[in-house]
Image (cartoon, rainbow, N blue to C red):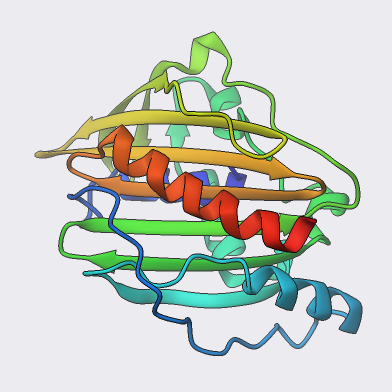
Length: 232
C-alpha cells in the first residue's frame, strides 16, 4: 500500500463519491498512450514506460478516470495530491498515516520510475500503481494500533477499521487488507493489495460501498500475472 495511494482512502473518507461496488471483471481493452512528466530523466521515462505495459487494462463496466501517468514516483500528479491529502487529515494516531506503506518522501522511492492508472464507475473505483525500486523493498505489516482509529477529514469525522485478508500468495511477497470507513452519512470499504516481484512493487486500491475479497483477489491475480511478464 503506497503512501500516495492510501491518501485516496483519506480523502475519500470524507465519503465524497468514490463509493460503491465490487472489484470488476477485467477486459482486454488497451489503455491509451501516456506521456512522462517533462522533469523525468530519459532513463526513468524508459523504465516507467515498461511499467505502464504491466498496468491493468480498463475493467469491464468502468471508464478510465486518470492516467496512465508515468515518470518518477515523487513527481507524479497523483503522488503529490495524495501527500497533500495526508497532510490535511488530522489522525488520532498520526503514525498510521505512513504505516504499511512506501514513503514517497524518501529520495530512493520518490525518484523511482512509476506508472499509475485509475478507473471509475458509478459503483466504485480502482487505482493501481507500479514502482521499480532501486533494490527489493516491501512495506512492513500494518501495526496493531492502526487496525482501528479515527480522523478528521475535510471537516468530517471518520472511523477506520482494517483487517488482514487471507489472500493467496502472489509474487515474491504480497499482502491484502480490507478497510471499512464510516463518517458523515455514508460508509465505504477500501480493499488494498500490495505485491512485490523482484524490484517492482504493485499497489492497488478498490473503493466501494461493498468490496468483495474474491473480486479483489482476482484483480490481484491478474495484476501479478502482468508483473510476471516484465520481471522475468
